[in-house]
Image (cartoon, rainbow, N blue to C red; front, top):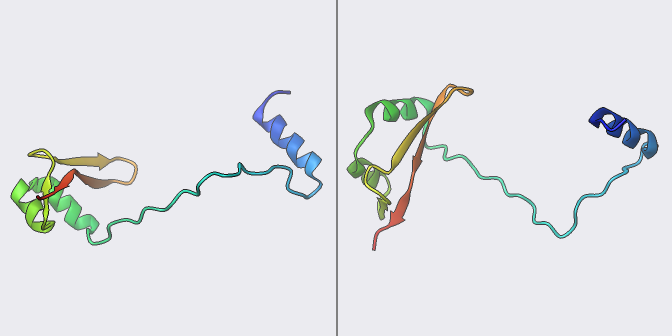
Length: 93
């Protein structure tokens, strides 16, 4: 009937308990990015409220500097009810 339900019904009826599809070949598997677990939710909430200066971030990440001054971006996620801090860093020369 052209719907997704009809397509899924067709695939399950034709399979007979066997896999009736094959994945694409030659593609690279996605990799999992790990979370930077040294920042707790409470710490991120505090940082989002205080909005620290560039000197704070450069002291936390020695050898790095913010790409643009004021380069820290603070975003609140309504779904998870938590803050995210995004930094653009460059290696010091």
